[in-house]
Length: 376
Image (tube, rainbow, N blue to C red; front, side, top):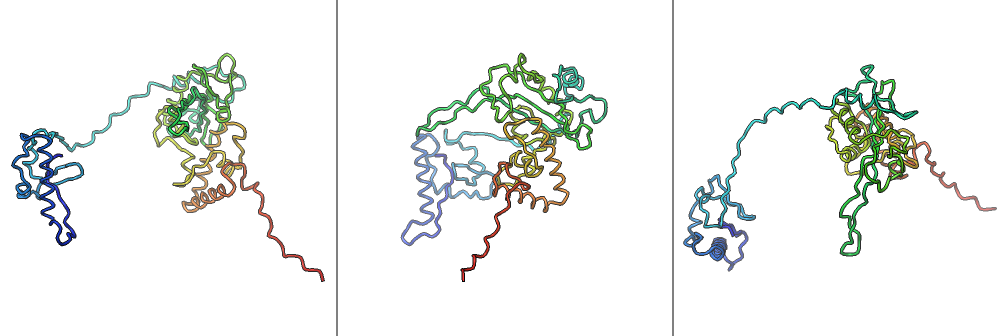
């Protein structure tokens, strides 16, 4: 026990019970006896009685003694009394300084020439679904504020590792290891003549065996990531990263659904000001987050992700949802919140699957008519 003034509450002492001062003295005596027993007679505890401690007024002091959960003001001389090895002297010095101006970031090593070489000089497959930026006009040159829709798909490279729990249940000790398999980026500016046309649709070459293609969620099938058999645009993982990094450093704005998780799994850092996540745009606090399929069904009247996912379709849908969000916000905050509440009410009533939307929901059955009149 570290020595130090202790306080004992004496409020509401019953008649015949020990007074507050007696309780306090007993507490000091116990603490000092414990210190002597623990650290020996040469510890400095000998001769230090509760009365001598109490006799030293130290309420007006800048020093505090932290003794487990007990924090007590102490005189300055208490700071230098170590009581043998009962205290460990530690010095912490704090200095108020002005925060220095951060140094400007160095120019990105991924230049426009590198990006153009990776995209324009690529051997695109016949009937390629995307058209890279051609840099022939300002709208075809990515830069600060360029709006892009993005979506990524992943495959499982290794299964989850599970162990039996104490009650026979399975406990996941290592989660599924996922790898980036496809990245799609579409043009998102509303006045662009090629609006929603993809600029990137990269399939990442598999460098290790794929455990599960997760076809239901990724839309990928065996052979899609193999350069020997795939009809897709196969790229190295490094080249896919370089292209994304260039667009990020150029200041492009990325629109997507669940981008926080996607960028985390892709392992790239994007400034928050460059992210528009439709998951967050259409979300009430402490309520469930709405799926892309449900929002597309309710707000756009579109049926997506029926059997599988397609990253180009998802990226385009995210851009259209963002445009719908801006349209809804024009009527004011109150009108937007009411519309969002209506969306949640519809989902709770008909399910959040996206299979039912306002234009195809079955009307409620008519109320029953009056019972037939009894025969005369």
